[in-house]
Image (cartoon, rainbow, N blue to C red; front, side, top):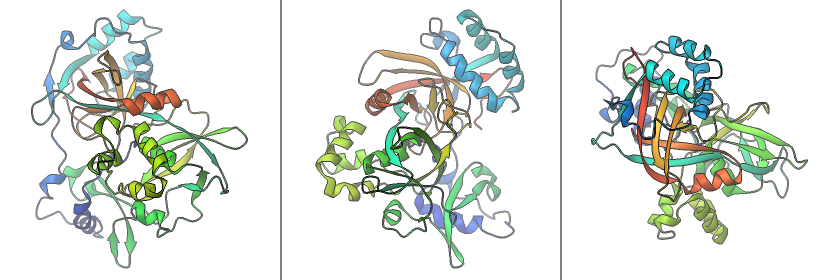
Length: 393
């Protein structure tokens, strides 16, 4: 995650909130007389027919870790149209070797290259991870920054119930008198305007770490007794994600090559008096829930545990959740090829567009270093089960 993690990627621009709220809150929604604004319509599926020999390193890559992630996807997809037969065949394979796995994919799938709206085939590949924070279940002088559970007054409005072409698009808001208005922004939440007292799950000792936990979408908190608890995304306030790294570049505070997670943390340590104002530049705010400790990894938007270095977050308007994706990019700050069969198992507020992905590096400090440095160019191929049309969710 992420992330921010993810899962907050399905929302419209804030400028459209009042119009959409009014439409979605009609007691008995009439069929709209006019179509909703064109800017809100999800993009068309951007796929071009490809061939297996066009996929970089396909004949030589290790598919065993990809297979583990694929079986996780099948847990969510095995009852969906087009996937039943594929996932049933997967369940029937006992300890397949690389040759058997390559044959499984080639016989059961067709590759399609992902193309951007402008016709280009390259896009931005970033990284996210599961951070570790220090915290407590009670507030103390050290632990004073709260992780909130989702508030009771936060509404989720499904626009697809009013406009079918906006399927899977949702808005968040709250009731004010007889009106539905946008939910409180980060600045308003930090200023105590939201009814969140009593919704604290944990308290942590670092405001910047908490901010990046919201971006990643999940993490682990080390309590004073040394035990670790897992937290994951529960909901989001509906405001658009704004990159504070980009803001620091625009302010002349950081050079583009310095605007990594580590660079932002260094800036924060040097300017503690300006940190609050910077964080409020991103009005998006994420709420959490405590997760079972038995989970092997954070849950992605698909609802299954992520696989370290084999799960990616994508824009579900252009890439179907759960699908295998051949990602061709390079390692962070490097020209060394990173060609790998990944699984599209998560989403994120900053992950928008066709050739766009967030690479899940796993848990801990080293994963954070890799995620913070990753800002590479890459290409993507989606694998669709044979006999199905290449469509999104």
